[in-house]
Length: 122
Image (cartoon, rainbow, N blue to C red):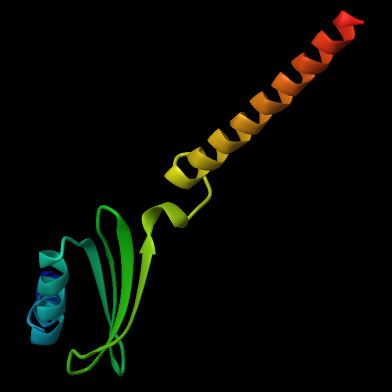
């Protein structure tokens, strides 16, 4: 029984080591990751597909999605600013919209005050 457990553990370790090894020795994927890293991207996700690679990466200001063929040639690229991903109150776009709304409210209040003053004069 102990021999069986030891064999199972050895086989599992060998398989895990092989899969990690195959991921880290792909020269095309390594070149793509190196290129994106030097451009300031982090959190780089590489998905190897039947026809090539799909890459997602994030920088301080944007997210990029790229598709490469098996030889590493860039086929398509989508670049999206991080602020435009969602509409929560924490991003810059929403803050600017809220500021604009506040300005309109203040203008409405000023008009109401002017009307009240005109009524008092009569």
